[in-house]
Length: 279
Length: 341
Ligand SMILES: Cc1cc2nc3c(=O)[nH]c(=O)nc-3n(C[C@H](O)[C@H](O)[C@H](O)COP(=O)(O)OP(=O)(O)OC[C@H]3O[C@@H](n4cnc5c(N)ncnc54)[C@H](O)[C@@H]3O)c2cc1C
Ligand code: SF4
Ligand code: SF4
Ligand code: FES
Image (cartoon, chains in turn purple, blue):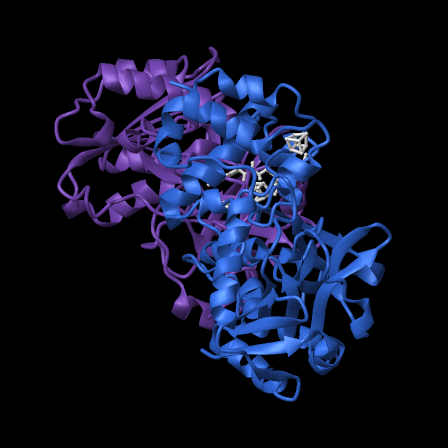
């Protein structure tokens, strides 16, 4: 059995900034240094990995590419502390280390035949990206796809080029927002929960998936209920401080569940049963 | 499995025989009793109550290297636990052995923890029955244990006066008895009966108890109860109750860079009673005060663990009561849980 504490080396084949500033976001496209790792590797949308540099540390990130994108993995990382700052120093040609795939995934098989609406905020779009990509790559299996996404300013939008491309493809509708007015911004101005009410997706045969900062998620969940979504139609991811990523170090529990192992994906129905989930 | 006896005169000889393995036994260090590797049989101190630091540290060390690396060119070297060798822990209390059996469940759950499990495989546990409860705050019988309990043990010794009754409990215990064949004799016909009576007497001497029936089921409903504020009011957040608890297993992982860019990734004991334990990178803390942390500690032991593994993660050793600097008492907390509505 493989030692789950020993990471795999990955080589960066491409890296670019999604968003500028103090809490900038950088996307890394990587391949495993050891080709053999691919043979044993399989992940699903929602799965995460512990990412780090020996000597600096490790932290948890979702794998922001879908398994339908072959031959590489993507991570989109916001600069938030020591480890992420060190990762941001790296460029194409450098390497870092990952342990994974970790955690559970979005139940995309169960969602076959349903419409899907994703509601993201800021870096919270990262876990939603593989869901969107998966649905687009398995288009016949799903109903309508609708994207709702907001960030503080137009510069803070992750995956901008992709949204443009998706919008033009006619695959789905993209609804974008920024928090405060900017010149020449053609889309919604205001917070994501308000944009959600403006778009007002219909709950019939629809799954809503939301990721973003905790305050946003809280309001989005309330608004989805108001729109008639039942808790079992709504999914989100939770974040917690992590160390082992495999349910041993005891750090990331919400109630009796471990976010690293039983999550990060939870249905709202599940979360309603856990008192600590939105602390 | 067979029952033998070891005369006290031959104890030193037996320990000498066992010291061809890595032999861990209770020993005096200044004024406290600790489990440590002994070279000389005379160092063993078996007339002890219970050790301050539980022997869990030999399966789950306070700090251990997971792998070594070179920064920048991270050739990762996995640590080989096998080099630590075959280990015999001699003379531990049944509650501490049972605690290991409880923690085994976590470390073999879903992802197997290779370091812990390898060490457990290499270790034989030789228990010493509690003829007298080691402390006034022992309550093992309330949480599924027993002063003569055998769970987790490979061999159990009972002090019968001039000799120890030696019960082989597992294949590992049997093997150990073979190693000691020159020191062990056949037990007398009525020895086992005598020991059974001693076990009953020992149970009767335990002074503290709690009726745990219903506590795991009840805890979720008490989430918002004011009792958590009350029972945590005096807490200093020092973490002793968890650090020295034989069933606590939480750890941190840190990278240490040594000389010439070489280093090691290690894990070390951590405690959910520490404020920083759950702080997010954003600064948000889902368990901001001692109230939430105490609630988590009790829920983890008495609700979440039973939910996953059908066993309470507390063996009633009383350490958290004896060693808390402000006398916070888990039985008092549990009493309040029982009374709360
Ligand atoms: C399931 C999940 C998915 C995520 N996905 C993404 C994603 O796709 N993109 C993204 O940008 N972010 C994501 N995050 C958030 C990301 O993990 C954190 O923002 C990141 O750990 C913080 O950056 P850092 O490691 O540089 O922080 P650092 O502060 O450098 O932390 C490094 C390590 O030290 C620990 N640490 C931090 N502060 C302290 C302290 N005071 N004392 C002791 N130890 C400390 C941290 O827990 C971490 O393990 C995700 C988080 C989770 C749980
Ligand atoms: S030992 Fe006592 S004071 Fe220290 S953290 Fe535990 S309950 Fe609080
Ligand atoms: S919670 Fe207290 S009594 Fe129970 S096993 Fe831990 S230290 Fe011993
Ligand atoms: S990160 Fe260790 S238990 Fe979840």
